[in-house]
Length: 325
Image (tube, rainbow, N blue to C red; front, side, top):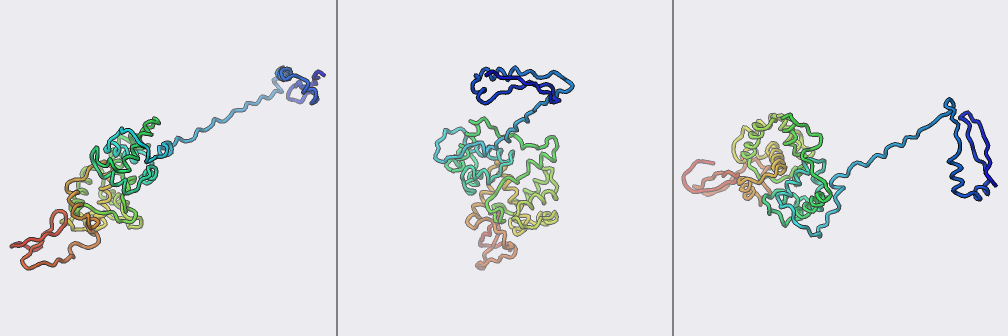
C-alpha cells in the first residue's frame, strides 16, 4: 500500500508529512523510505520559518601530561645503550627540577630510588662518577624515554621574567626545589666551618642583587618547619665573629650552610678541597658540631702541651713553647 501525504499548517510553515502504518513501512524498501524523507518539501515562507543552528562545543583537549606522567614506568632490570654520561644526567636532572614544577621527591618516586641514592649521585662530579648508582641508571632510562617521545626539558622555568636583574637573580638563587636529607627535621649534616660560611655569605651579598634582609628570608626557609625566622641582625652578629667554629650554634650558620649546599647542587658545582677536608675531619661524627658552643669546650692535656685549632675546626696538640689556645 503506497504512502499517503497530509498537509498541515502549524505556524512554522506548511510541512509535508508521510503517514504510514507499521506494516506499510515494513513493506516499503529502505531506499524508497530514505528517498521519501529526502524529498519532503519544506515551506519557503520566510516570515514564519524559524531555523535553528546547533553549534557543537569544541571538545576540550586534556592538559598535556607532565614528563612524569608521559614517560612510562622505569624498570631497573631493563638494559640500556649509554647515551649520556653521569655529568650529563646530573645536568638534565637539575634542568628538569629547576625549570619545571616537578619536585625532587616526585622525581625520586618516579625513578624508584631512595633519597640517599639520589643525593649521593647528585653530590658527585665527573663523567663516570656515580655510574654504579641506581639513580644514574634510572634517570638515564627516564631521559632516554623522554627523548624518544620527542619531549624536551624547558630551558627556563615557565612564566619566568627576563630582562630584570632582580628577577633573574631570584630565579637563579631559588633553591626551593632542591632537597637535602634531614632538612625537614633540621638535621642536615654540616661540612663547612663558620669561617667558610662567612666567606660565602659575604661573596653572595657582594655579587648578587640580594639584600641582607632578603638573604635572611631565603635562609629562614632552609630551617626545620617549625623554626622561627632569622632576622637580619642575627646575620650581622654572625658575620662579626671570627674562627672556624665561632658561631657554630647560630641558626645563621646552620641555615646558611643548607642554603649554599642546595645552591651548589642546583648549579652542579663540585665540592671544594676545603669542603672535602671538613668532611674528612667531621664525617665520623655526623658533621660539624652545632649543639655545643665551641668557646665553652674544655680540653685536658699534659703540662707543656699546647692546643691550636686548625682550619677545619679540629683541635691539635703540640709540645713546646707557645701561646695559649
